[in-house]
Length: 336
Image (cartoon, rainbow, N blue to C red; front, side):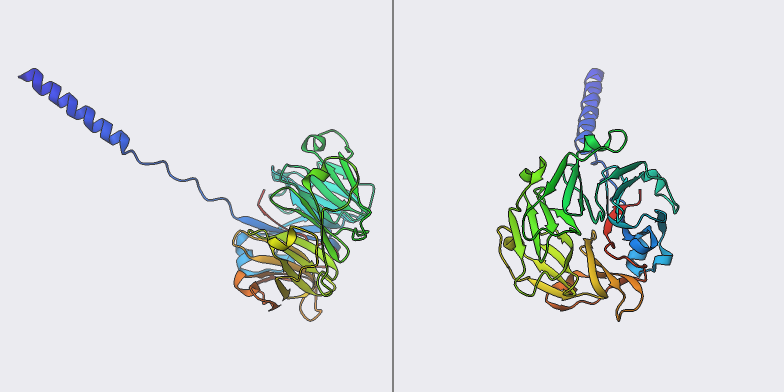
């Protein structure tokens, strides 16, 4: 009888352990991603400013930036982007591409670039990393591309790809470029936005854009900045027209002259660059504060304020920033 009690006890213990293991709690979810900082290039100050998440909610001036990256005299920043390792790549009016190491961006200062690429042309206004990790830069009359492997080569490696175009819409100075989810390149044109397919980006040469979104007669007047929203619609700043224009995803599939789905009058004067934050806020830089006041204005337009055409109020403002000229590039990225 005693043996039976022992066997029963062991069976009950085994059953308890089995039930406990099957009902073991799931591991905790991973922590939320670190909030993005807002980074903006200020041409006239030779600086890149970093604003922390609290400042993005409350607003700030350029003098209050949490981090100031000083490029030094003679290096006026235009386009910029972060690579997958958190290094900052900055294009300058003087024709350079400068790379600043992530560990050098934790605090304000004047770090030395760990990489300096020459482009052979001035006005490096558009700088973007493509989904495949290639670095692309729009300079005077052409677009240059470096593969990830080429970027790690010693010295000042030449680009893998140099693209030009005989398109009548190809501008002398392309001011911005952006990539869609399929890896196609969208480039600022003259009164238009140009799309070069991913398959056209693999070798050097003169290519014609696969898609040209041209003006309907009033839109795309002085194109400067580009950004895709989460739904695949393309937002464009029209500097001369003083507008921010949204082109529906379905209107981007083929060349044409679609009328913008929404046309906004932004806060500030002279819209330059665009970017979306993690909460779908649309940020825009303008050359002047409202009323042609100080140089350098940046504002966030909330989703509810950009559903229909018309004046768009600012939910948050960063001003004054200083003279952004053709810069004012906005990038959202965690603090390195």
